[in-house]
Length: 245
Length: 267
Image (tube, rainbow over all chains, first blue to last red; front, side, top):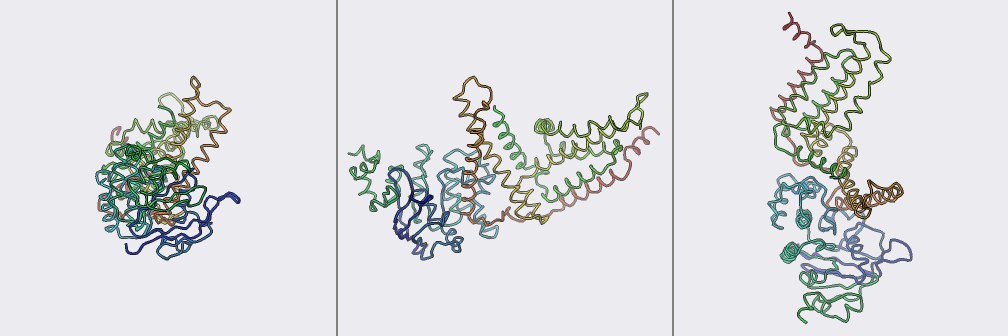
């Protein structure tokens, strides 16, 4: 996991001409960093994450992962190092049971079955859901599905974890579990969320975006404590900070 | 339970059934697939008036239902939509083929009636054989067996994904009809004026969901080939099962078993 980083330079992207979704985004995230992305009106954060894993290549500018430029030819190599957790766990889980879903990626990378099993067991253990091993996907609760989604990417042993709205639809207990789990990981993490309390608990660095541009990039503590800044972009202080005011 | 909910429940029940750990589930999928194909081939090959010969072919589904501990009642309930269609196939035969070919006591039976019953039985037996295969084998294992038979990966993957998307589509349809029903109290079903927009919404949502599932697969290294776990080894029990049924089908097809049994009892 040495010297892994993502470098985004002058990234521009739009689905339709004259309606830019991302404008001149430049961002560098290094090893073991945990970066939160918050967006004023909610537009653009999923798009940014999807661009970082190459789900859309019609962008301008450059994206490099550990100095490898993100292009069609380099996608398999880059994706092997990145794990992307979808906002909706149902979009991520499609195999009949938990084990098969977690084993899906290592099998695709052509690993021998013993290694697939070892990685799958390790991924399940990392998110503490060994007991769900044989459970059919449709019998999982929302929180369990989220944990399984994370296990499905951990079995790829990624260096970078990208998460889109990870706290959505989680009850308080599962939310706490997820926060604890993410703080246990030493990967480079990029977490896009509208849940500022979640960002506060999991990210040391925060990027505030509005209208497709980066407005502020700095320490989470500085940005999320800045009530005036947040209010100027239609956001509010994290609830946990309200109480401490 | 709504019809869509019922359909989702049935798919999941069938999945659960196929995932159980009974001896018939543990058999090699290729062996089960081959026995099913052979059974269907031999069943449909019976001549149209050979009703007595065909009746003996019931032995395969009967044995699998009993030994495999698969509920016959549930099977008929799940197949209720297909079985009547299968039975309708030969319904006009008695009108065209009126020559008497047999007597039951003093009752003359025309060739059309015999061929109609034969056609119906062929349909029922083949549907039951297909059902028994999917009730004892997961879709992944069936696809694995198809790949072992060198069917194109595109074709096999499509079967697998259609099966997976089916529940996604049904779940989406269920959510939409529930949302509709909650805002249209007292209405039975969906008003025809909103059929178009509901169908359009369903299509768009399903496409979105399918797109996301595909993206999720690509992000985890999917490049057009599904891997179905470790290689499943052929065991002696699999070979025994295959040989026993192959021999049994050939005997049932080419020897007049019913006549022999009849002669033993009647003399």
